[in-house]
Length: 365
View 1: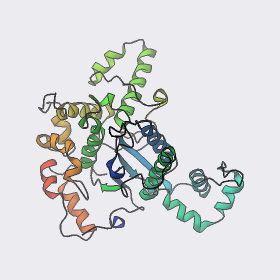
View 2: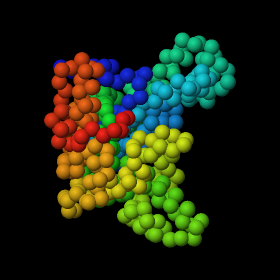
View 3: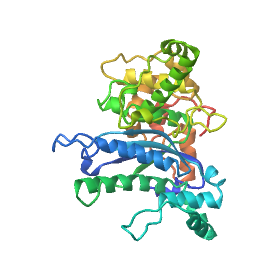
View 4: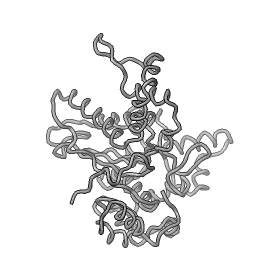
């Protein structure tokens, strides 16, 4: 029986979700199409640019993303607690930035002005509706996918669907599930044979985070008069040198992404440092790749156990996460709570959770 999305996606509660979609007929409409011989790879940059644009408007945080040839992955955290602190004027300004008023002359969008913002603020009922929409997962994904579909169809001079169906949405119920899914998403290009290392994985959050970290270390070491390589050896990160990426890659930073670890300014997504996460992805990538050794690194096991993951099942978890969890992902206790909340006696994924996750960790979302 299909479970209505409204029963497990509550716009009034903070939640973390793995969202993914495929292009219509699973065609290579975001990469090189071997059938037609056309290269659509430039559309991946559209996706990242729009994702960054929407992250600056909505009260939704982007935790991870990966754009592949015919599908995309995003991990998003809804933040109704943040949108609740916005003034009516800020809600109006953000909404008018998202849906600007168009002038009659050539139907061009107009930058929000004080008169438009004030007029919208005067309608308190409308502001209440818009406030909820600005932390809505469906509104975020709708604007993201609609913009890509319209631009692609215009470029191809066609009409009709670009995406196969409505985006799929899997709630990540605890930190163990979030970590496993983030690594799964960040390693997707490696599994697809599009990259050899995480730092060479174009159009992924892990590459963007590594590039920003590398630039920060370079700046710090330059100020201190030290060699960048010594810092990498000290932190334990194995030679993260950013690869060449998309258009304007030099200008991209990870400031718009949800931080890995909490800072005084912003709440992070994981209970580990940025470097620990880099090492986790790097070592996991070595396990996933067929031409690398498949043993679990001795440094990897303590990190996994601390966040409630089973080291012995880690390779299978990060390789087949999407096929193991269909409706929700999390530890046994989290899945049982989810089943009770949604009125189900049983939920798919319990067997996979028993294998993938260790005993319940003390961390929550």
